[in-house]
Length: 307
Image 1: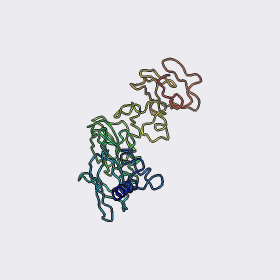
Image 2: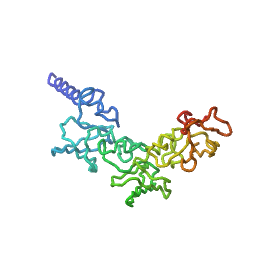
Image 3: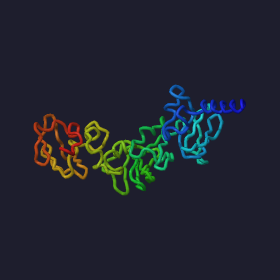
Image 4: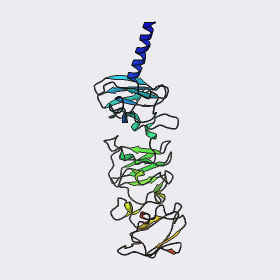
């Protein structure tokens, strides 16, 4: 009986030493190393979530190799010393690029079925904010439109690259490109050259559907931040903003009807407006008291839709 008790005690002690405090099933799909850094929780060198029973094989740059198996919720983890970068394969499928950080779910968010699938991650976000060659593999162009959308970019040397949106609408390339680019989506050409490859920095999924074309993008934001004289957009506006769809907006004698999301804009080259002094402005015939002192209407007027 004494030997049985000793064995049970040894098993319990070993389990306590080798698993996280809140258990091996905790926090699926999160970046485990955000806590398991040796300070807040026991240090893991590699950890994450894929699917239940997945075989995750790690080979470090010193040639050491071993396999971890996803538990009943898909979690796996190790404290084995590793020399980065790593080569990683899951169920025999090797990742295309070396891994420089051991917290797998920092990048590999979970899909609806609980599986971690890198190419489907973070639709609608500015991919290049991470894929800059330092935090993650460098993409020259990347973004989200609609599934199966054909995105063709042509650089200033005439090189053309066509990309197809995957099931989340994501597309990306590391092909060297000389900016600015001409971009075409499903045959619809963007009216102005593109000077940055992170498409969803502008084409946000926040308040409009992913895949909204330029005139429908970012309703309620200060358009002049990008489309003003010092902004990064090549299309320059003299005034722009969001009110209600169909609203008639007049600024300094220029008139436009707000589109389906309420956006309106006046091109600086065809409708120049000087705001050295406030300019007369009205919406649906109702004049703004004191005039407009600046062309980015939603810098002051919130979302604009209730105005």
